[in-house]
Length: 241
Ligand code: CA
Image (tube, rainbow, N blue to C red):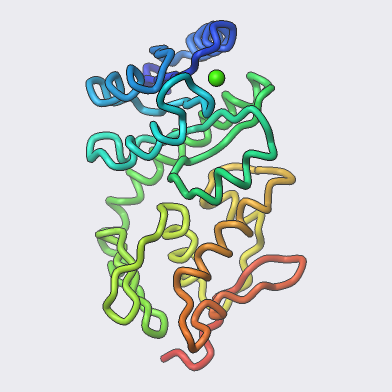
């Protein structure tokens, strides 16, 4: 699909040009902003279909921009693909749970970047289509004292709302929907991140770790998500229902 709009927030001129040229060639409409404040303003005024956000920006950095985009109603759901300079930063960023949809490390290949953009946009499109189909699906999933409200994108534990990132929510939902089945890391990456993230399965592990911490309590609720060594994860439903 063409005519989708991508907002690039990046301060390096050569990368701006590289992105603009290649993305336009792929049929996207590209707007470039060179700092966080202008990028944020542009995103509010003309909500794009996807945002490519550089981490290191003068003034307001990419992390702050991402946080603010997620806080605003208009831009809350716009997919954000973050550009980071070093792969070592990735764990740190994942740990911050800013709600970016994906990350790519510089230097990146244009081919890989466009593949990820396409995957992200396709997944968003499918989500929208699924939303209609899901109207008939159960809106409320339960496991032990945890309730997953698929309509409000909310998770409650013993009635208390848990603060989960979108990815954590999707992971939990996927595990609960497939309770008792082992889901491989590759399967989860494909379903939740939307593509084959070869060698990046630790992304899943990091998110599972956070998810467990959030749902855990003295009775060890976090352990309902079992690690199947070398394979993936399973939601253990023993004692449930
Ligand atoms: Ca930069």
